[in-house]
Length: 59
Image 1 (cartoon, rainbow, N blue to C red):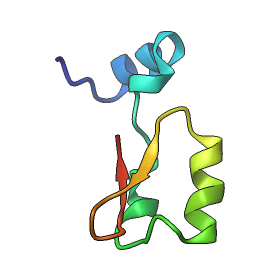
Image 2 (image 1 turned 90 degrees about the horizontal axis):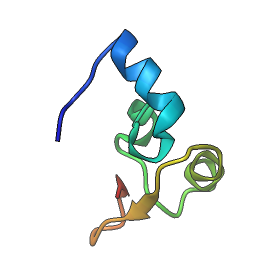
Image 3 (image 1 turned 135 degrees about the vertical axis):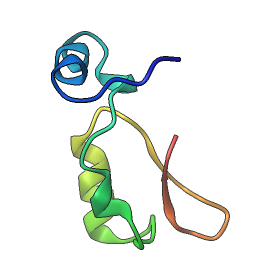
Image 4 (image 1 turned 45 degrees about the vertical axis):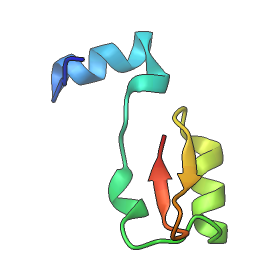
């Protein structure tokens, strides 16, 4: 698993959006059942799931 940052990551996002994570700072300290997080999860191609403690995590 290779990690890409910057321009290479932007190019890769076009061909593989499910595996490209962005805008994750919105999730820090937020609960998965928060209405704003549910709306956010509908807009991104990756999955946002609740952790055991209820925090929003990326699958």
